[in-house]
Image (cartoon, rainbow, N blue to C red; front, side, top):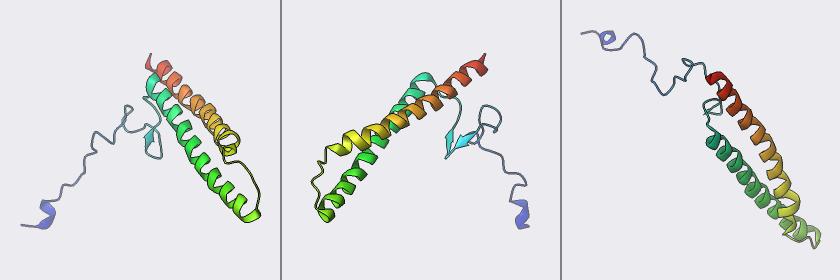
Length: 112
């Protein structure tokens, strides 16, 4: 018995890899760029803004810690929420709502 007889000649694509358009659907970092409903789009936009808010706030608190300790300044740590975390979250919310809103509207138009 030869070894090549047990190996299939073609490897079928799994259903998980195929999109609605026969494998042509775009993706970005593994996330599909189509097929989002309204609530999914809204949830993704809001969660990306909250993640950005907490990440930027944490990094700015550590930055202010270094700034205050090494340069002997007296900057309030609560400023990191207002001047760093909130503007970053608003910027990400604006971009994410635009992107996911556009994807949702495009899906609604192409569904007809």
